[in-house]
Length: 492
Image 1 (cartoon, rainbow, N blue to C red):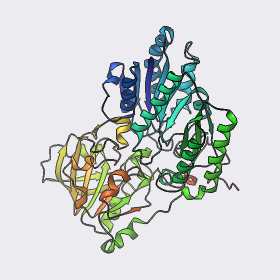
Image 2 (cartoon, rainbow, N blue to C red; image 1 turned 180 degrees about the vertical axis):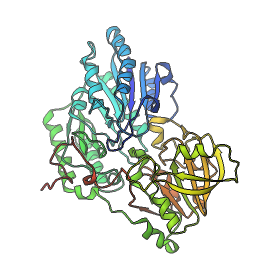
Image 3 (spheres, helix red, strand yellow; image 1 turned 45 degrees about the vertical axis):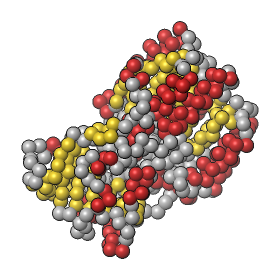
Image 4 (tube, rainbow, N blue to C red; image 1 turned 180 degrees about the horizontal axis):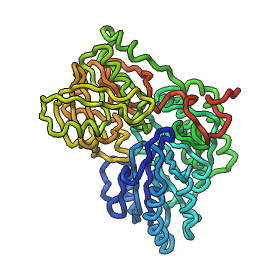
């Protein structure tokens, strides 16, 4: 069997000012892709099954980038120019299937539904119109009608934190193998209820996602024609028509059974929709009770969620630590300018820096602090946990760019040059920082940090600070989303 492979992975925050260009993407082509075997990524999961099934893989292109602002139009066209010639030759000479490694929430300056457009372009190639198209995508995708119409078997993660990204790629590839072996080609159907949940409300250990995932697994068990049932939490920071919760199924059975399953899930989501909005705390109030709170205390800051597209340089938690005169505090700030400003300074030396507050107009702005340099590094580290969500797109080796550890009073600050989600403790330990030694740790995340940080935490509080990844969708200036939709509108 010959299987064409391509990957496109970006989660696009439409409400931040930055634009994501080609330099922000890790771009791999041809044989480079095959060398990702063993790196713990979605690509690795596909390659494992492909090797086991003895397929001939036709690797075209794989583009991946950290979550950030709207993608420049030329990036997708560059990706397509890499993919299209390989796809056209494969279609002309004979190909049995297409497999895609996706995120599902990419938006460019020109295209609102990038994944739907990609699938439509593949289908428009003569010779691929009826070729099975399978793949894997993120739980925080915005799953569209075009994606369902043009694909046969796209499979979504079931866990948030996304500890199952590679495993889901394996599952999706095994379903493709089932299709090729049995010659049964399934279809996809989807339903997009009028609900938008912020990332903070989509942990699969909590309701409503926990209940929906349980129902999805029961539905799969009840109907053998349903190859997979996807519970898609959606991405609330995308200003697109179909942003929000959706459900999709892969089925070899009748449409009415698929529609019935989708309606059952929609009914439960509607009933539980209020649970998708967890409460948040005032960081000063948490720190005011620090003497009686088990440590380390996590101050989880979803408003500056790096994995949601925020700049990762918000000063809200750092300001609170300073205001409350906390010793034993630890924060990570993405600030290449401050890293550069430390050039030439020896460890133990002191320098005044304007730290953070540069990436979002919502932040109070930089903090001017005289800090002591503890250490500097190239910022590269290896994941301690290959089930970390970082591995899904990036693999085991992560690069934070030039980095520096500085100290202000009793607060340690890790300064990085590239945004890096706090999904693996190797990020800190690679810089000589042992997180268990600190009383308070600021974490710029919503949910996906839990895999790494919960085992070391004495207590954890999600706190409200200024930033673009708000947990209240009503604060976002949507222009394209379908209306009415909960909670933006009063829906009975």
